[in-house]
Image (cartoon, rainbow, N blue to C red):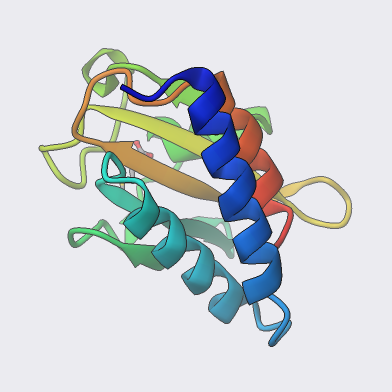
Length: 152
Ligand code: SME
């Protein structure tokens, strides 16, 4: 069992590790790949960990770890698009209850989406994490993943 306190301390360590790792290049693909790989391998409950990026009005998959994912997400449908539209993080305890959810892999049961703000605070994409567990993500995940995407 991980307590909230233990989880927050883990994220604090991972955030520090990422800050050290992300000193080599300003290339966003390299930075996103590093974030996806570290998070995915640190948290055993993360089943799919990666980015969807806005390109000419479409959400296209970016660097990720985990099973094969959809390359393009149908417009204005699902959790990632909701994060873009609402410009806020979305925690979905049970994806089967989220209207329009896009299931790239039927083994996912819960999900968190964190928008990536550009310089004008408009979303340029999202960090998306899926879990096979129901209710895998809490306010602590939300708070720390929001901090982590600012490192990109
Ligand atoms: N479930 C997401 C699609 C991306 S996959 O989870 C990797 C959605 O509903 O937007």
